[in-house]
Image 1 (cartoon, rainbow, N blue to C red):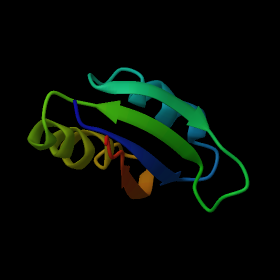
Image 2: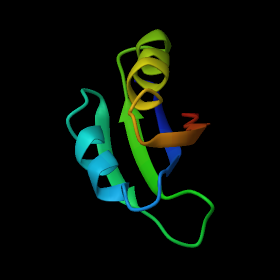
Image 3: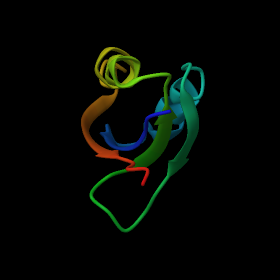
Length: 78
């Protein structure tokens, strides 16, 4: 099952609203606010296949209104 961590930068003060919306999306395993980075939120996403994972990231997460930027870190399984 493909998985990825998505680092998210959102509009100032909107972190809780973005996290709440992320948690409603199918495939989102966890979402947390982070400090010490240029990003505000980290979320883990899992899907049945890579196409579905790409769809969740591009058509769901990146289209959340207050999301300004993302960086995807694919998880490799040996």
